[in-house]
Length: 109
Length: 114
Image (cartoon, rainbow over all chains, first blue to last red):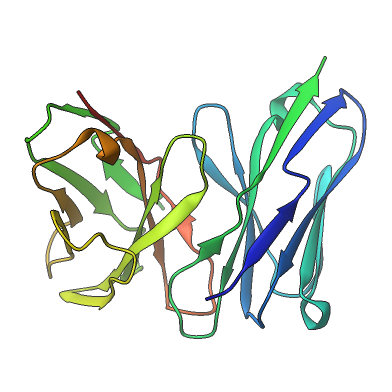
């Protein structure tokens, strides 16, 4: 199956700092999503981004499918950004998503 | 448009009892997926269903676990004779199709086996 590797595994930031989270994957995919799992356990859709670049407020994401990686950028981080960030990939017609192990982000005031 | 609904949100069962977890997909979605998240771990795929059909159950444990998505009503994940190792968060997701579009996740059911 697809191998998904996220880095770094843990990240501690001071409020206001910027960060880049990375997701590498082993096979071609046609569907990639980024999620934020907040401290209450809820999974929040951030981006559906099989290729290209998208922005939503302080967050943006870029996927370079030909090189098999995706990046999530968080600018001017806030304490509410804390939680675990997952990337998840689906192969063509596979149905199921394969998740990375996540990056745990802690933003300190 | 209501999102993916799961109930109950929290479920406590004693060892040996049965657990039934329910999932109602988003309106217009006919593809349902179940994932399990063990404490301090990522999400692992369990089973993928369409109405009345199991499409992929490659992630389901061989014994005690079953899933269905009947023509009418929610999808059900059933765990028989629960053990402490079944304690986890169980998430349901739905999508319009099996490949291209986003999966949307419910809030999860947190199962605790005592």
